[in-house]
Image (cartoon, rainbow, N blue to C red; front, side, top):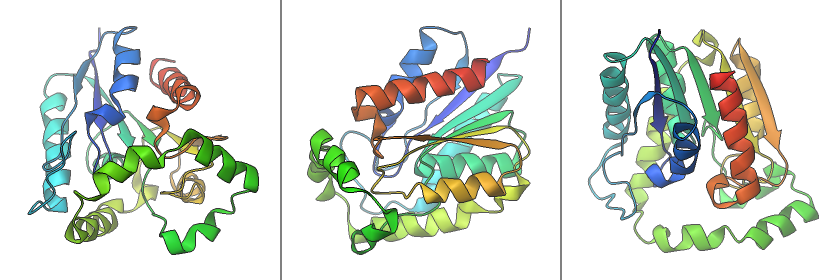
Length: 226
């Protein structure tokens, strides 16, 4: 019987807590091997001084190679920057499937929020769920240099999405203020064997909203475990 492995890749300035609810949801239902790396400088307590974007990707790649030794089939669940890393791994290694959650192939500057074309109801919903309270305490621990590293590593690891051969499920929230969902619409067109699910009223930090989290978990479960 083929042994299944899942690699969980979190996002920029985040940590395992971003995908831990999805990990627990799947692990209580299915048996699989896994790797769940934490990038240098990331986690509950951020320490981004002196770390480089290449180190973040290398940590993800090392976890993939370690998992590859133990399993026959590998899926990668990548969130935000982790979705970029997941897609780049699939361009360079044999991967059996990808789940890309709000993949950060692009990011939104505050000055360009108009690009998102959010309705007044969308903005009201974002204010209602109050995502800023999740982000604000961490901002003071993110030096400007770390943002530059993020932009550079995303650009260098996006690669050529048309080279991804495995099945891909893309999931994106329609009130994502950090990564515009149009990014995933473009990605679906570029990745040959991909499908996109857009979630109404789902923010970038989906793991902090119960309804969005459940939808992401179910979509991920159906894609990987059929």
